[in-house]
Length: 516
Image (cartoon, rainbow, N blue to C red; front, side, top):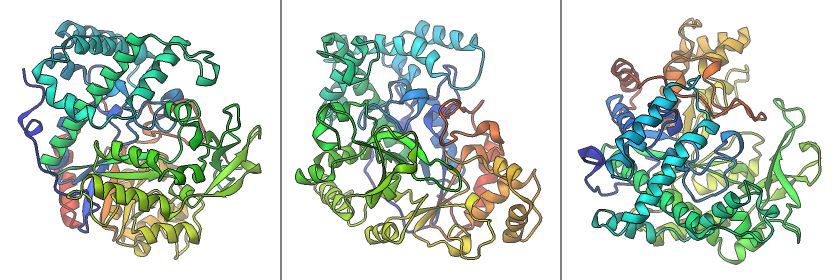
């Protein structure tokens, strides 16, 4: 059996990283949200089918959330590793095709999920049912890893995984401790077999992800990844590189990251991530950051940097503070970090990386002139969210009339309500202003596609639409509500997107001059 379809099998030449200077459109959908019989979307057949749907719909890019292991409550922005891939994204079907699992293994997992009460993603269920199968596949790979069919992927992975020893030991120690954070491990003993299994899982993730990436490239679809500025305190990165973070002698963060109070959060947001010791990072040429960016750009073409403003200055909250009100702004590394990354990328792959960084700046929140100067000095596109555009201020930077071409426009992001959800809670003035922007009345039935039409017609060179908005879904399809823990990151498509939807979306993009 073939591992993947022909279009996803042939090696392809890389054609550019590119925040292209032509109008284009894409879709925001995390792989976990793809449909399928195992309770979680993955990197396998449904992902490849979605890429083909994107081409049918005239789309040029697919944006995802972080692909690293999820943290508490399934959050991909609180990962225990800045480098590793989330094992639960591995395709069971592809592991069967590889001979690492049996058809009975796959059927048993599908039957178990079919008997499960619910349709949304349940990480506890996945860890109890899918993860043991993935570990079984890892053991099978260890027994067969010297076979010629794995040789090319093994060589590619070995040359790009300087982080793997830290991650594998961290994961093995955490498993041996029953899940305790690293500062509670004591001597940190671990089972060497678990270390080998963790390395095998990461090899399999790298193999599946790179083939998905190559197949998307062959079809003209670029992958937009996501990199959070901060990492979790309980992570392999902090555990193995404590000197790069602002910690006290006992390993505790001196201050925590977050956001100051604003119109949406009276107490601000207290995230709990440690801050960086930027002087220590600069002293070694930002080597950890350079390696981090390389690792992600092996998997995707462009990277959205979450909380970009933190590189100019980040909100630091004293340890023990009950909320984020007591924080203060701490200076970040500024352009020096990005200059180091740019030079490293050009050295790594000069044909792929030129003068422009393959980055999108998530410039939302408290944005000051120095943050804008950093973004513009680096030539990075910022983000324009249409849900924020209709407050009545003619100078509102999110309004299409005020958007710079070098930007990315969204109806909303993973942190927003859906377009329809926004409409249902918007005041009458906001609804009226949307209609005025389009030149016609907008109703509840047309609200989602009204925002899509406005986004596609905006001056921003790139437009990205969440899949939920294409389906005109309401509040229940929201991906994340910032400041909350439970009930997020769970939404999934019930079935693949239809050919009729692709045709309709393609026509809209053609009218807007955005066909991929």
